Image (cartoon, rainbow, N blue to C red; front, side):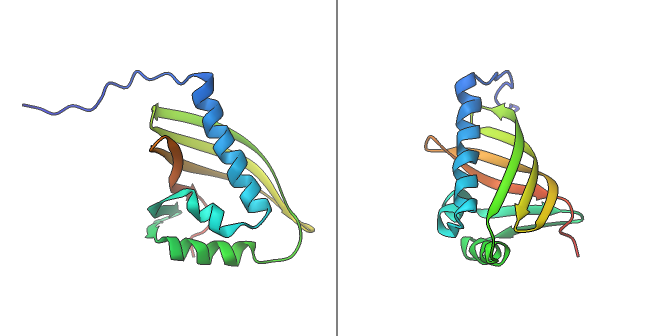
Length: 135
């Protein structure tokens, strides 16, 4: 007997889309306030990070260290973004973000993707994908 996945006929409701966008609004507020522990609480570990030619998993401790390095500078963090959720089903959503991030006098446009997984009714991000981090 062949095992088949669930049918893929899910159509998100406005409330489904809003729940994802609200999750990102909270995450962005944590980033703006440099609340690294709260940011780390939003992930499902091990967290997958994918960039050009490289994919790695990291622990919460590794993620906190990365955030501390990236957000450790001075200056206000400003981010404007457009997010486009692509639901796989009611519990999985890929979100593509086009954003401009500014810290002090530095500003940069970025595009990245996140896979969010619904766990006990709450979204957690599990995979982050962004080009440009390969060495």
